[in-house]
Image (cartoon, rainbow over all chains, first blue to last red; front, side):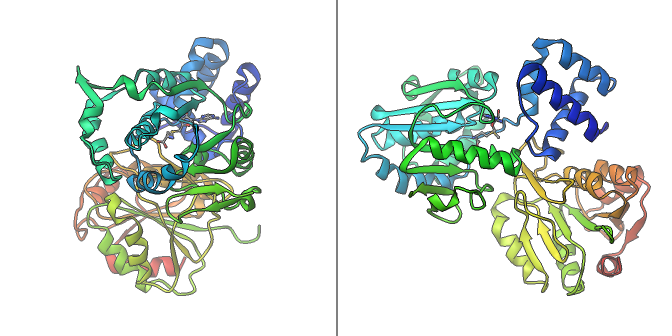
Length: 273
Length: 187
Ligand SMILES: C[S@@+](CC[C@H](N)C(=O)[O-])C[C@H]1O[C@@H](n2cnc3c(N)ncnc32)[C@H](O)[C@@H]1O
């Protein structure tokens, strides 16, 4: 990527987004958000930073694209199969003892993660008594998640992931192929609710037995991470589970004492106090 | 700050692992600079690679973790399937964004962030490889007056990557495999 956005310019843009639109990216990891800004500037062929800033400030419809492109939305079904195996073998049996299961996927992106969960719950015969909340800052990804169409070309990888996660059914029975897309079966969607929710500024909205927030916190600085951990603590019942991405940890957060890591490599904590 | 912080970043693809395995045993046990290694590989290697590399040196070899401080005398490995970014406060960030040059981790990403954080106190070395990841990064290194170095394409197992760098970037040093460790020890 050619042009390099300067620190001062990144600050100006982040301030604009906060002051004009109320989107607060100021506590995101700086190196990463700067790369995203730079990438957008190059992608949309702005002659310079000033023109880009002017567009952001003056064109509210462009904001949608800015939010979409500053955040990273890459995701997969059954990403990190060993994680899903642990869910299957050790977490779901515990959740099964509840009369009703509420799970929150924070930063769910286009939904691959919540559909994977629905498949696990279905196979454990728990889906009928579950409710899955998928939230994200970005309305565009939630629209996609709601539709439940995924690129057909990805299904080979997802099917491999599914098998590695301990899946024993025919993965292709969960979707129908049409026009290069895989349409996930409707019954998996029935227990899902999608809504925008900004982890930076929105509050707790329910109490859950499990929260998944995977590969979102890597984009936040330490202070923001700690705030979000507090939000999760407030949104989780006692003995509930919190799952993070494989490279994320709550070890250094102020609420760490209240949680117990279940297995070193799979990043699932249980709230014990 | 009295002494300027220095940093070495080594990037490589096909044919570079062997080179790194040769560099590590020759690094000074009292090396006072951090070294970051970004190599392309299959995800399956993951944890094996850090262990394999640490068997070659008494220096601490570990996978870079997000928000971790970058410390002298440590050798950090970019984790498989994440881009490794460097913050201006000399800590790591990880990023799972789009692949760049079909690669994640991308060498360009780490070289570019390193250049912005360490400016002229940076040495980036590009080794053997079959694609051009790292070449753009070396351009940024030069823009910030850092040192850009490559493995001699004529002795690299796969010459394309260092060859591209040589054609597009004003390279400061062209090393034979055996010269790299010495150069780092004397920084
Ligand atoms: C890399 S995706 C992770 C998707 C999925 N959880 C996974 O692990 O595959 C990160 C998601 O976090 C969302 N995100 C970023 N900042 C957020 C915020 N402040 N509040 C809620 N979601 C946010 C992004 O829009 C993006 O969809």
